[in-house]
Image 1 (cartoon, rainbow, N blue to C red):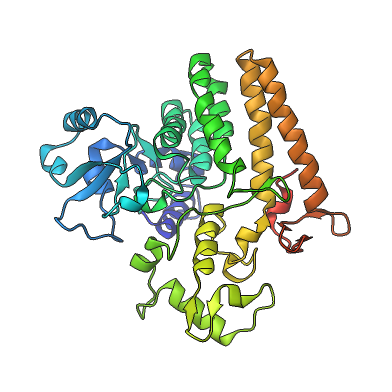
Image 2 (image 1 turned 180 degrees about the vertical axis):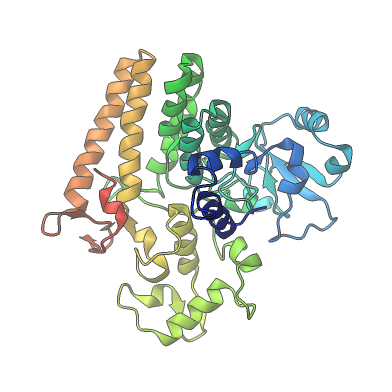
Length: 384
């Protein structure tokens, strides 16, 4: 399977061979969709996770609590080789994710495209950009699969996930759902399908607009992972050549550098050389933002939970306006107007809190200290 660097190398090889194009970039992308597609046929491979070591050698695959477990198993028997089916352990997901004893893959009903050959999970905001390419390439069934899987995640797992592994159940990623739905509808014009998505839109919107994602002081939203402690994927696999995790390297940075962006004592206890629970909350929430890593919210973006980000609130504004558009398509004009009112209210708050007239930029808003962080970043263009 391809890693991202290998993909870039192959792309360069495809584009320039003997000084002239061997195939166009678009032709190469079109030929690669199948390589990057994951489905139930290869579930035994998808379930394997180098970060985890299952006790009995069988890889856990969890289905939502509301799902008919027997029906899922029957479906998989019809799609998988019997030898592959023996390699996975189909389980019902506990109502409380804290009761999960072994991490595993989260079941999705339809095939999906991954962001690179080494991945087996359907990732959050990566999938929006993938879907754009699918639609451009005429791969409409797969584009709809991507949207349908996200609707399934919302109904079964509570939100669109960072990716469909159990250790991602505590966070989402930047919300592009309504854009994905309208993109599919724009091609298929399936009004019944669009109608069936409204309940999931509302549920996902509530995820972002209720506490702890909502900050009542501003009426705006923030990134906030619902889990506690170190992110399992960091502890298990993100090691350097000396076997040190990112967290080990971060502690070393705090020991040896002066940080003026924020009060380091919130995130690092120098007396014990330990990262604090609040650091791990910030680290997890940074991963929900999709901007990992960057210095946008100070070193390691540890201070992210104290900010209303430009990107998130701009996307929620777009979600509000696009939900109104969906409801208008469905001839539900009164609730559509309510969504437009929400969008107008959010726009006013964004402009009031985040626009810096001196610099001509939108900046993330620190609602704790009631100030913008004047850190130029690509997200300044989101409101445009």
